[in-house]
Image 1 (tube, rainbow, N blue to C red):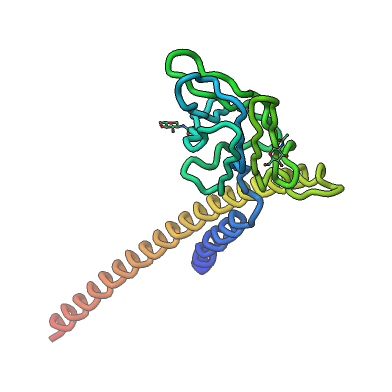
Image 2 (image 1 turned 180 degrees about the vertical axis):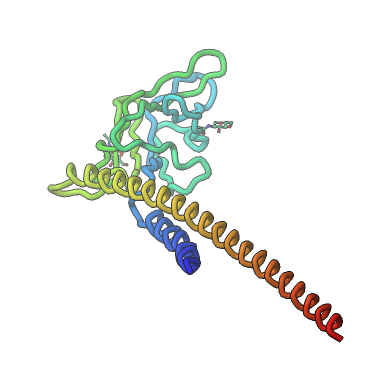
Length: 224
Ligand SMILES: *[C@@H]1O[C@H](CO)[C@@H](O)[C@H](O)[C@H]1NC(C)=O
Ligand SMILES: *[C@@H]1O[C@H](CO)[C@@H](O)[C@H](O)[C@H]1NC(C)=O
């Protein structure tokens, strides 16, 4: 009797699936480096007659309109939950070219400043960009610096290693789960085949027995 094996194998993929779910929910492993605007103050506008339309944009991404920012020398403070937040998401080891512009309907946007925004620029999850006579803005990114202090530089690489290891584990577990599912299905098919054969045999034997009974009856009637 080989049939108990496929039954026990069939349960294992569910266990592995549970492990997968647990991996995905480990906090921090897949945390996003979302950048939000905390404060901004502009010192100039490039328009003479109209209120400015200030936009933030990173290369290859959509513009974010800072519709509240209209007056110069006024400090605007945000909660980070506004409809247009977060401004962007930063990759771990690569900078993004971002800038603050003033949208212009008739000519290319005026530039307040354009710069490389990097995860490593954030200290305590905070980064202030100041350009004389243009603006002073503070950006927040709580996940850009894992923690501050003496080992601030080592932590991100350790985090990257953890991430790589988790992805490797996920791939291995997925492959294992697929293989086990295939084995379970194959085992189930084999078991079904065996059962079918047994059933056919039983039916065949029964047919024989019935045939014998018939013969016996016939023999009996002949003797009489
Ligand atoms: C940019 O905006 C368009 C339309 O408003 C939208 O379909 C697209 O997904 C946006 N792209 C990004 C990267 O947010
Ligand atoms: C820029 O703004 C931040 C936050 O409001 C403030 O702490 C900092 O002193 C300002 N820097 C300058 C140069 O105005």
